[in-house]
Length: 396
Ligand SMILES: NC(=O)c1ccc[n+]([C@@H]2O[C@H](COP(=O)([O-])OP(=O)(O)OC[C@H]3O[C@@H](n4cnc5c(N)ncnc54)[C@H](OP(=O)(O)O)[C@@H]3O)[C@@H](O)[C@H]2O)c1
Image 1 (cartoon, rainbow, N blue to C red):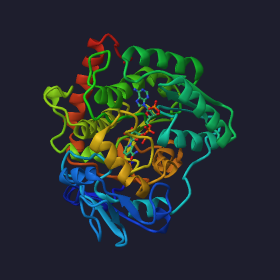
Image 2: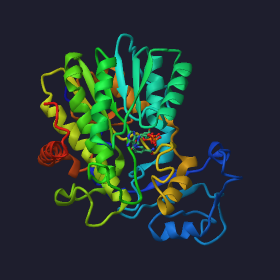
Image 3: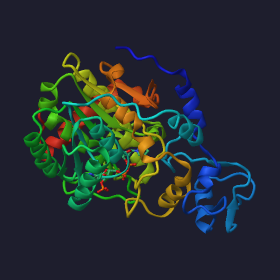
Image 4: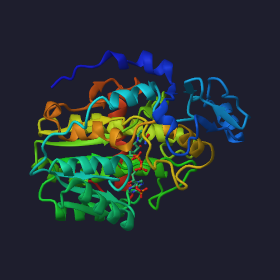
């Protein structure tokens, strides 16, 4: 089915804008950690300012102790590569629109969904919504305690006891194999796979397989897991794969650096993250092409700028973590951030739409680089080779 693009989201608008705007209102001012309309303005803010993230409006002077948000407008203007937070959209407008309606979800009785990174944030809310809609819901988590806590939470909030957790680490190809085997053992069918897990790292780390960790978790992990589950997904058709990308992919204007996919030449956390999210779109395009005629659709989405645990606990530090904290009071809740994932996973009107990028439940054009079908094809081939070299093989 050919989707109708919303022309508001073409390249000319997004690539030029590159601005996250947040307006304060009473609701925001009452959020914990934000007293009486004031934002903390320690020295780090002026660092952030120099790096390209600006607050404007009365009182928003870098170097002062506080910025009063009496003037109702704050602008965070990311310099290229500084932030991968959702750009090209007024977060206030996004929040308003997202709050427009309730969660759009269809009946999922009799269906089985698998959601990676389902123990927190957007993945957790996606799991709650789909379990509430009747789906047998399997989440994956890398930490057993966090996985168990989420399991209890999802069962309690959804009223559905058919919820399970499989623990494995997407940063390890061997662990992914073990995890996939466990999922296949517990699921006779897989109607929906949501590749949601992801991270951003402010410092370069390597996985046990020798891959740069952001690329490994955000792209290669989803790539291998999907392939290992694909025969079951195909056998369950009509079925869906939903990949959680990010508007941050737009910061990867030059596409992927195929000669340096492991970011050895120089590491900038948000640029590496942006490229990994571009890779999610390439994976969507190429997998959709390869699955033509199988009854399995593949879509992807940016969830919006969402207040989750993303970039916490050493996953991001310094400027990046500070930037995330500063904008947190102004952005979407995890439940709002889960809405497009839940829509693509369940709603009948998108049952036959494949290879598309959705934003707020509408098919949109991703960046020009993201529409490069040759790059998508190349990434697939390179990823297959990387996974095979690392001894993990693929399922095709
Ligand atoms: N929040 C935003 O504003 C935003 C914007 C655009 C896109 N996204 C995307 O949305 C997705 C969900 O993020 P979120 O905001 O909900 O953040 P989150 O709360 O940190 O959730 C990320 C999930 O991924 C899991 N994960 C991370 N590394 C993993 C690994 N090596 N193996 C297995 N699981 C791993 C995390 O597990 P732990 O709990 O153990 O860390 C967690 O369950 C990500 O793909 C992110 O790129 C988020």
